Image (cartoon, rainbow, N blue to C red; front, side):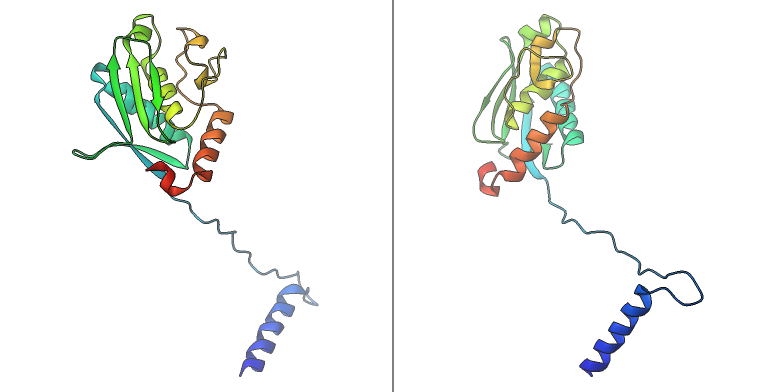
Length: 179
């Protein structure tokens, strides 16, 4: 039984591999390489303390969700303890990270009053929670250049290097490191 199956399979391979005498070569259909889908690490955020900046925080989180695959930012469910707290205050925007994916973000009104773009501020500060440092001074195309890009800069999207760094941060992080 095994020999007949083996020889039948071998014959099929040979027929598919060699050109036929009176026609074109027949190639076996190739299946696309299957890459294992890695689930994104879900980080929750609580923007209930972000006051007038709540929609900017939601949009900043959406920017990251559109930009990277290894992590997803979601609003925390009611009563759920969030990984990231977002608060509005009268100071300068800042982030106080804990371990990767945790901490507190402050959306400071001082930068907004000076004319900085709220969604860029939110995305920048969330970038700190995703493991990115400030990279100042820098161009508007680099999200982590922050305020050094000037008040006319409204780019809230990370560049390729920033996206790659976040992907690497979360691809390498053990699952328990994000809790």
